[in-house]
Image (tube, rainbow, N blue to C red):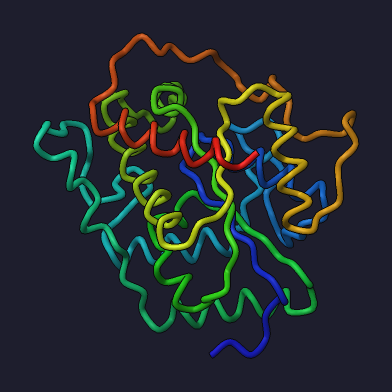
Length: 256
């Protein structure tokens, strides 16, 4: 049982390279308190907005379960067979040890005087069941991006190379978790591929729904320059990936 905690806790859900930092930074501008967080990252111009305490917790859970951010199912996803797609990630629910739950309580106690505290870490999607057990009333907002845009962005990072095939499989595992979380309890979902105008228009609605302050147009966190490179969408997507992307598109279309 958590004794000390913020009144409300908001988690931003989404895969790596999918706009989670942009969405979190935008919510922060409206008054979302993030506490300790990174404001600089080699692969993110305006910082990834991640709380290192939360990241360390997730890494500890990953270690217990034999996972990494590149191996969300415990194995490399470089050669996924057609017959594997429908069950990919089905057995990737992470087990939480008692010390992990205790660490969550310590993190939340640090922000107990805040009416609303938020965090983001793409790894959250792979450990979400534990968070929901510890904080049943946690609130969520999600974001996704076109599978090829994510895969190509991952592949462009020389220090952590990922093939396009791996990137698409990773996208599928992470975003299946996003879809399942939304099916369990619906929450707003945005798309990082949207135009700047549409993204800002939807953010205005989101800020109002959460109870955050509006952000002046000339102070917006999101700009089109945050998209470092234009994605090449000429490669055909595996059918399950395409279907999942379309499902997320339908969900996002209802929230504007």
